[in-house]
Length: 376
Ligand code: G3I
View (cartoon, rainbow, N blue to C red):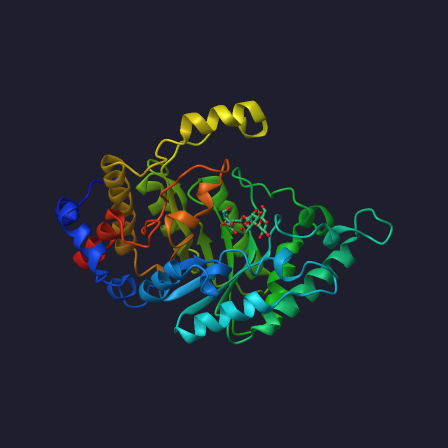
C-alpha cells in the first residue's frame, strides 16, 4: 500500500473536526462537483431508492452522483422471469429517474450466471436446452431489454463474471450450453439492439494477474471477430488491506493498455473478516462465524473509521493519478444500511463499506475522498 501524501494526511487529521459540522448542516461538497471533469462518479441504486421509499439514500444519490447503475432491477430474473413475461416498470422508473436528474444511466447486466431463471436453459424435453435454443433466448432477451432503452441507457455490462480467478472460463450454464462463443454472441446482439450504447465486460478480482490476462484475451478475441467492446469494469469489492494499491494500479494500467475505457464499477470496502474456512454451508458453524465476525454491531469505532478513510484516500489518490485512463468510479450502494455486504457472506452482519452512514450522513471516509479530490 502506498503511503498517504501530506495533504491527504492533513485532511485526515482534520476529519474529527469537520465531520460533525458537515453531517449536521448537510452542506458537504457534492462528490460530482469535486471529481475531475470527464470522470463519472456513480452509485448502484435499488428499486426502493428510485421510487422514493428509501428517501434518505435517494437524496444522497441526487446530491452526490452523476451516474447510476441498477443494483438488481435490470438483471434477467427480475425483468424477464418467464419466457413471455417482462416486468419493465421498475426499470422504466430507474431510467426515467436517471434522466430526470441528468445522470449517466448504466445497464447492469445482460448475461450473468446468477439471477438467470432456470427456464433459459431447459429444453422441450425437460433436459438441457440445445445451443441454438439458448442463443435464440439470449437474443430475444437482449433485443427486448437493450432495445427498449435504446438511446437512453448509456452503456451496458454485457457479460458479467465469465471468468474464474485462475483465468479459466467459469463453468456456467451459458458456457455449458453455448460454449465460449456466448460472450461474443452477447456483444453482437447488444450492439445490434443499440448501436450507440457502450458495451462493457465486468468482473471482480481483475487485480489478479491470471484473471486480468484472461479479461484482456476476451477484449482481443472480440475485436478479432470484428466486434466492439468499449470498456472493462473492475468491480472493486475490496477489503481494508487487500488488494494492495500496487495491484489495483497494475490493473488500471494493464486494462488501459488495451485501449478500452477502464472503470471501477462496484466499489466498496468490507470492514469485517471473511471466512477462511468457508463455514457458510455448515449451519452450526455459521452461527459461530457470525458471532466471531460481526465485530461492530453498534457502530464502527473511531480507529476502524479512520482506517476505512485512509483506505478510501489511498484508492482515490490512485484514481486521481490515473484519471486520464478511468472513465467512471461507481460505488456498490449508497448508504451502509442497504449494502449487500450486510448479507454476505452471511446474512445479518452489520457492515460499513460505503461513504455514507445509515442516516445518509457523510462518514470520515467521505471527507477523506473529498480531500483527495480537492487536493489534486
Ligand atoms: O427481491 C427479492 C425479494 O422479493 C425476496 O423476498 C428476497 C428473499 O431473499 O430476495 C430478494 O431478492 C434479493 C435481491 O438481492 C434484492 O434484494 C436476492 O435474494 C439476492 O440474491 C440479491 O442479491 C444481489 C446479488 O447481486 C445477486 O443478484 C445483491 O443485492 C447485489 O448487490 C449483488 O450485486 C452483485 C453484482 O450484480 C455483480 N457483482 C457482484 C455484486 C455483489 O454480489
